[in-house]
Length: 280
Image (cartoon, rainbow, N blue to C red; front, side, top):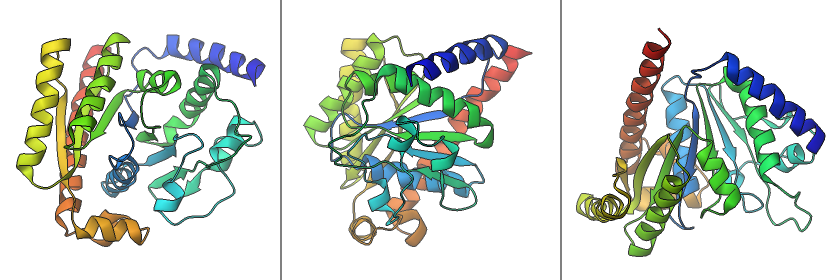
């Protein structure tokens, strides 16, 4: 892969010189720790975004610990490790969920899982750029935490949506993600979703603690994208391996996810309008 990746990187560098202001469309869904409901949010967020008429590609990048296929009750032999091993192209492993939503599944528990380096991750980003004209948004469901590979992915993304929960440990881990992005001179948008909330006060307190710490120690405040309640509809959708926004669109959490998607769409529209004005 190294030779092919190097050639693609050189090609991408040439393309970037010709396209100075690309549209912002790479979105990473990340969390400082496991258990925040990151994949649940990523799948429902991607589906609801596609419901607005956007063409969306959701990629499971929780390397060797993937569960998007389990969450959606889908079985496929085409997984991202085949791309990393150069057995198949990125297009060949795309799974069509519906007319506007495509998926790339991962796999789990392989003792011989292919070694993924920064160069291999760059190769993935280059391959994503080559099919990016087919999509309005490419959403990456990240591994939990922020090892060097995950951080490399987050820094290359246009938007990072940090999923946390009201627990103090989860809030602290979300702060660590923001701190690492800050120290990496990340210039994109950092957005926060508080999941598994008992009520709005619960969500407000969690974000306030995160915001205060970020402002005090980092000199910046993340943007609050919204909160999601945890109720029986969420539990039922997960147990039955269904998308909440698809099977229970009238539930409170589904409505909150819809509000988050609309808010995100407004943010991205403003960003793309600013790019257009710069080009003019």
